[in-house]
Amino acid sequence: MSMINAYSPDAGALSSEERALIARRERVLGPAYRLFYERPVHVVRGEGCWLYGPDGEAYLDAYNNVASVGHCHPHVVEAIARQAAVLNTHTRYLNELVVAYAERLTARLPAEISQVMFTCTGSEANDLALRIARAFTGGQGVIITETAYHGVTSAIAELSPSLGAGNPIGAHVRTVPAPDRRFLGEPVGQAFAAGVRAAIADLKKAGIRPAALLVDTIFSSDGVFAEPAGFLAEAVAEIRAAGGVFIADEVQPGFGRTGRNFWGFQAHGLVPDLVTMGKPMGGGHPMAAVAARPEVVEPFGRSCRYFNTFGGNPVSCAAGMAVLDVIEGENLMENCAGVGAYLQARLKDLAADHPLIGEVRGAGLFVGVELVTDRDAWTPAAAEANRVVQAMRERRVLISATGSRANVLKIRPPMPFNTGHADLLVEALGETLADL
Image 1 (tube, rainbow, N blue to C red):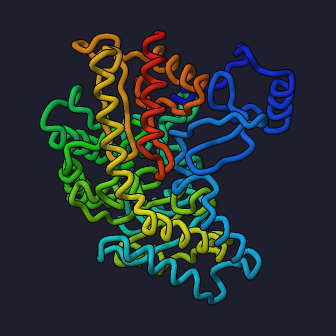
Image 2: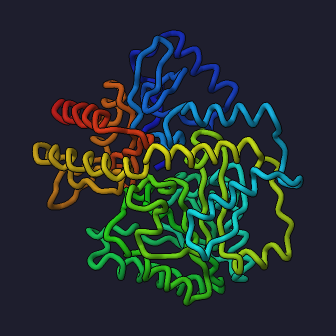
Image 3: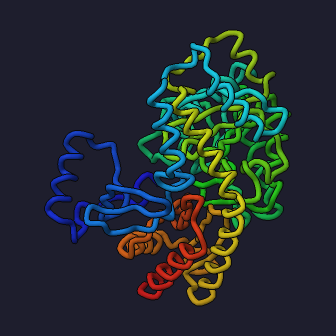
């Protein structure tokens, strides 16, 4: 999983300048970093749904949800610059902006979730949520999906099997299969809950008290699973009955990306105990947060001080405010719903002519296209998926791949992505599949 869509030193058509830059990068950044695409994309500028290379070549970005409201959105850029020119400090001083942003953010959550703590990254947010869950429950055990990605801190890397075989999960961690109806069976909610119930039993057998069920509510690293609505409810009931809490990782599906809801968990009729968020909330600025039920965070707050020098700083809060302004003012949630439906429909039409497409699924502008060599046997087409991703890059359309079998095309563009962009993507994909 960790080597999906990776740079290959044997890739052709790299200029001598690019090879020299790659060599400098490897020398100074070390061996752990990875570049996307066999032939890496060299970018120097971004605007809206486009990235630009050093010679002005344009790439349609259908992958980056970090720049959620579009690359370098003028309103976000201006808000960051304006606040940076006035004040940037930490949360141990009184400041109106951090409080006002926290109020505006929690107003977007269910009434039961009324407190928020700021971090800089989604990894930090999940790390903090884990600490809070353990303080509240007295447990240590965590249940995740088999190909989950939740971050890179020491504690959270143990909950991120998608980082690869060199990153073992913790002894206190149990994994459950992704909610894939073809392998779990129907109804998928009952089957997924049965997996969680078995994981709870296994933890208890090992003398480990369950603390949390932690899931990315769009299951992005597992292959993108959004349907049927409500299927998570039974699994959440299982963890709560065992004394644990439900942590909804909204780093990727949150902030309106799924179109119908502002948060992925809302499709399941749930109110989580903890909600983690990051990436999209700053529109490219590094900020993240944990939102919580007050009763859940109270034991942690009573026994621990929490401080994060840059978490909740005024510049980050100005960026967050501006992102919410744009999402609301430009109706981006509605755009995700409409354009996402249009994109899925066009992709399903494409599947009629290309049997390599086994299934198109997702919600809003978060779409997975599963490639298979045999629709009846559901044989994963991992090699073909990689070839598609690389060929799309050569056509200057940027997507990636995901899933436990590395055969799901992951399409997750900035939220202003429109039907014209969708047409460009589908046309490029059709040409690529025809070439295969």
